[in-house]
Length: 276
Image (cartoon, rainbow, N blue to C red; front, top):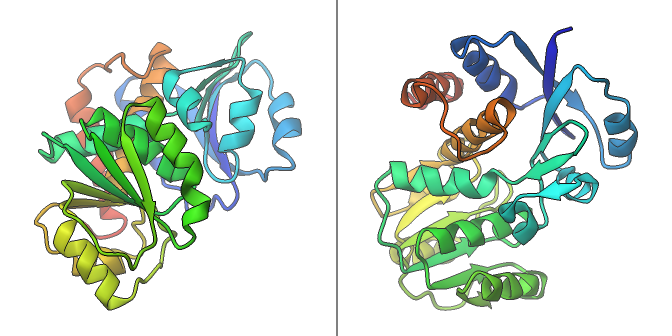
């Protein structure tokens, strides 16, 4: 019986995960299949319970990360902190992981962005929680959240307290203080007013914009700092951590010849949008 994995979400047709994972399993010598399936929040429970013993794991994208969090029997620390699971390791015990946090951290470290003391997060959605935890692990002591509706980001202040980071919430148009890095978690296609974008750019340090289609995003095109990372870097590194989980049971257990594996996956991800 073949070992099966898949990415679930709604929408899902755009996902590059099948190409990334399939290439990795070929290089690792694993005869595993990895597909995509459109599953909405209402259908998640039935779909999960319908899996047989051939299934090893699932990658979850929106809108299923909260449903997967509730379904898991065990959670890793990043999942516990953020309330979001993007990876399920199936078996007698359903184990839930959040690899988005580590994916962000790995992307910045690979780009040479270290020595962080302050950060700014744009947006207050599900990815913002992962961005806040990632900023704390990069060394940030102060994090500012910018949101169209600041009241929607209040819950992130409590998360900041849990990870030992002084966290504030502001509207986009308020004056901006200088920070070491910015993580934009805004929906793809978001365009900020020019004066707001320019002020954030001038004070924002290195940028990782979680959006990657189209690229450059409107914000990335106006960014003044030399380090500007596409969301594909986050996608790539969180996928590597998922593969570690599916193969080794831990997102910290490095894969054989992992550096070469990452380069192959990067070519697959970035060539599809003309970035290399």
